[in-house]
Image 1 (cartoon, helix red, strand yellow):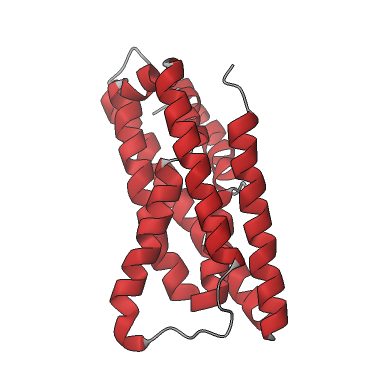
Image 2 (cartoon, rainbow, N blue to C red):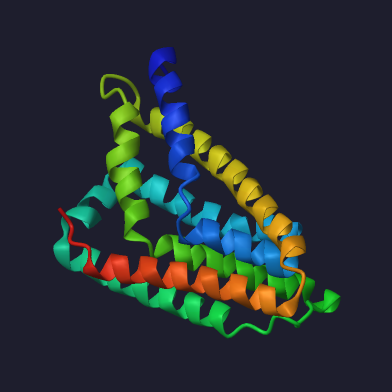
Length: 206
C-alpha cells in the first residue's frame, strides 16, 4: 500500500477503535466484574464479528446490505433489542457475585458470545466497513489484498483498544471496591448502552 495512505489510515482507524461505543463499554464492565483476562478474552468475540464484516465489505455484500432499507432496519432493531438486553443484565447484575474458577471456560465463552452478538448487531459497524475502509483502497490494484491488509490493521488496533478499555475497567474495579459503588458503575454503563440502543432506533439511514 501507499505509505502516505497508510499514514492517514492508522490514526483515523485508531480513533474509530477508541470510540466509547457499546462494545468498549462492555469491555470496561467485564474487566470491572471479572478481571482483565476475561475482558481481553471476551474481545475475541468482537474481533470475530468484525472479521465477518470485513469479509463482507471485501466481497461487496455489506454495501448491498447497507443499501437495503428493509435489511438495515431489521439489523438495527435486532441490534437495539440486544443492547437493551445487555443493559438489563448489567442493571440487575449481582455485584457481590464471584466467578467460580471451575466455570471459567464456560463463562469466558459466554462473555465472548456477548461481545460477538453486540458487535454483529451494530449497524454502525457495517457502515464503518462499507464507507471507511474502501476510501483507502486503490481500485487499480488488488482490492482483495488491500482489504486484507487494512482489515488486519483494523483488528490489531481494535485489540489494542480492547486492552486499553479493559485496563480502564481494572482501574475502576479497585476504585469502585464497595458493592454500592460497583452497582452504581454497572448501572451507569447500562444506562449508556441503553441510550445507544435508543439512538439506533431513532436514527435514520441517510
